[in-house]
Image (cartoon, rainbow, N blue to C red; front, side, top):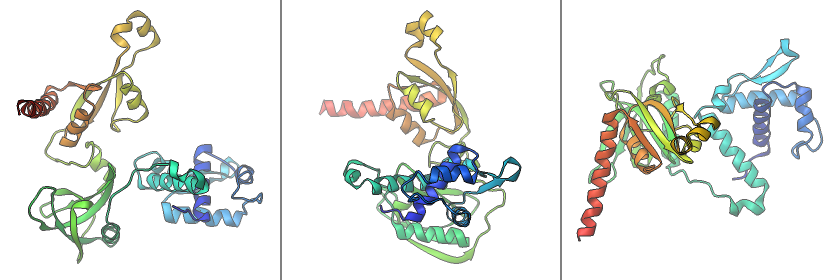
Length: 317
């Protein structure tokens, strides 16, 4: 992916200001002239202001100036660069593309995961969301012999495991997730819908692990034991936003009780134990273990029992 020069400058500005936390235009230019993009020429204030406005318009990232702090610039909404936001995803993708495009000799040695989606469907949905128009969806579940039509108000899009999903509100105030790969046809209606002022996407997905939603399922306080290197993985990439460590071996524990504390750490999350969460725990079988509550343990044991029976049937044949 070839990244236009202007986008490279936008990315550099956002990353530099974010990392510095607060920085003056003079300090910014000291770093700018050291880059190949600058050609050794400082960035004019008018150019900087145009870039700042473009960054706000394209990425929704606000670069503010604190006049009381010697006219230092800072990111006004840094949370969008710290959460699972579309801004963070866009910047990361563009940054990778910029780095790869500048190192053409290495492009065959950089492997990225493919996001599978029909771009026309994605574009239609984004336009429908912007104009707040209801959509008609011809949908077909994997393994289903028949497709079906349904209508939904497109509330938001979510990227999860290289798939795009639509959160739609159906008639009767029911929410449904649609995988864009399973949408066979999509039509934008003329009917306008109102997005509730108090609807917050982050709050909606807060109790969920992924894209399987169940509003009736209660949120559980789940304790998970992470063995060996898995605890470090969870320290670097949390399982869920609610994750906290309940125990972590200190160097004194390792000295006094090496066998007891060396191999695991306990974490706690608060979420709904939906099927995709259960699937994830099964994929980490032997490295992650649910300690409580018992109903969640029972779900995992039941799935493991069924999987074991499948393999026993193969052996019998």
